Amino acid sequence: AISSLKAAKANPYYASSVEDARSIIGRIVGSNKLVILSKSMAAAELDLRSYLESQGNEVWETDLGEFLIQLEGVKPMHTIAPAVHMTREKALILLKGKLKIDVKEDTIESIANTAREFLRSKIIRADIGITGANALAADTGAIVTVENESNIRLVSSIPPVTIAIVPIDKIVPTLLDAVKVAIIQAAYAGLYPPTYINIVTGPSSTADIEQTRVYGAQGPKELHVILLDNGRLNAKSNPLLGEQLYCIRCGRCSFECPVWVHTANYWGGPVYGGPMGIIWTAITIDPIEAGKLAYLCLQCGRCDESCPVGIRLSYILRYLKTIAISGSMSKL
Image (tube, rainbow, N blue to C red; front, side, top):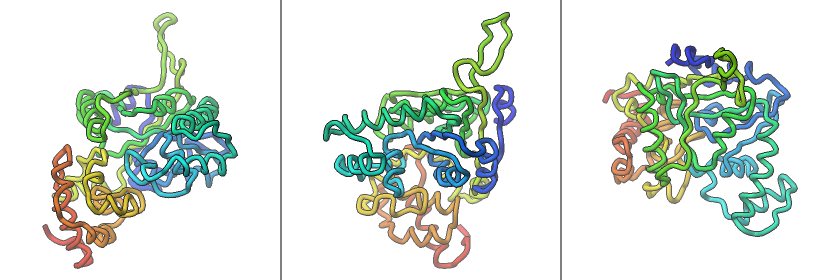
């Protein structure tokens, strides 16, 4: 993947930990910049918005749900639908109270349009755009994202410098594989066919003059790709936790979980939530703490039945419970 990214004139970096990734991104971004983010669980792993703000940058989420969550100052309540818990009345209070914006009508459409106008003013002036990735094709270095709002498309194409944070479990062999992953994620999140599938392979370029390719046409002049480990390589050596690396973050297991219905993403860990969230907490933070959270799992198996890639979620959660009891990684 790294050689393919370099061939596409992208700048790849390997980050073994949260600290490594923050340091790399911090050097690229610097300070006193206007930064826009697409919804990204990888960025959430890094607590990236808070980190960049602490470095003196102005940072905005561009996904409507994440934007409202940013204003509310709470944890996203679902992987795909972060503001699934929020009423229109609450959204109105946030826009009027936090941003002093007048919303013309008490309708969802008016709220969305008001947020669109505010965010467009930020997007068009942004210095840096940061996205995640649904998949990265090792053969070409192509980054594939799927969405319905078009904010990822804007974040990855308008700023002069863009950064993609790609967890290494998102690397697949070919571009065809990457597109399939994106389509499956959209379908199990409840959107098929997806409104937008984006493919980004390197910075923008043109070869219209004397067939000489130069970089920085109408899109970004620079593309930086952060390949994030954060516990994933270590998990690969564990037969059970390694299964979770196939997770496409569709969040279907959460919708099917009787516990999540009552807790939302308050159950699952600091970043992720629901059945898959507990296992990602084990991989990226601490398996013992994740095991303690797993004790709310009813072992009903509905998450197993709903997972599009066949991860044995309830079985792994039972394994994490044994880790919480023993205080160490137990034998399988």
